[in-house]
Image (tube, rainbow, N blue to C red):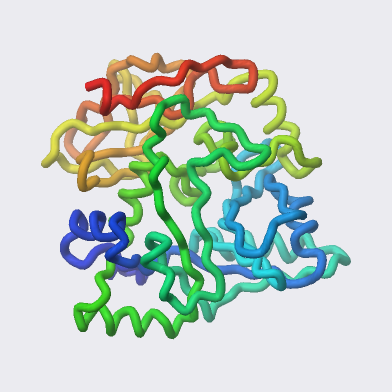
Length: 347
């Protein structure tokens, strides 16, 4: 358990990854927080102030939304599911208070009531693994399918997240005690945050607390795929979203990095990515994957060639990093990007 109360691992993070992916383990996600929005106007209100079309969201259907600043940069991201009476939002814990404050300020005279749901926690796993939990609602990750109104930039086949089976159940906090007791009795394996993060990074799945650095446009990390509806009405930042997608290219792009050396020290988030000794970007997320070894996500300049040799800063030196394109330099509506096999298949 970390100082922040987050269960990082239980001693065998690689095994925990395998168990989590196979549906044997569950991951308590203490780095997530839960917000709710009650009131008759909740869906139309959220639709009007965020990137996602939510007015017709059916109960039990999972989607996600972004809150952008006026220049189109990502400020907040939330997983969304409605139960017919309330809308539930799963948010990175370090951004939950800021998002709640912003939502409360945006209420005006509408019939909406955003609140922090502090009596609830988030437990993740496959659909089958989470099915027995006493969940108020469950959110199934739509990634990497392109949602209605969305647009996918990653031009590889198959997408590494294609078989991702990821569900987050919102359960009463008291249910965590039951999970701990089951784990102690050997009847319910648990996995830590390191395992959950490794599976996310391998699926090229962006996360606000990692990939949104204050300058991130949703295009740069392929977030138009699941979190942005390009045909809905106006919201803060929408003009930039439309302009970059329809008329230009995002200034930076997300890449997946295969890091050299199975026993090498992992770089820290924020570590410099370099080409010929010159900084061209930074690592956003990093993990040691059970199958792929040391991997990372990084945001680099759009102009870096897709075949450029890169290195990543580590404590005391650098390690080589093989770049796999997620968002192509030509990304945008007007670009015609050929579909490429994954790097791992080309080796």
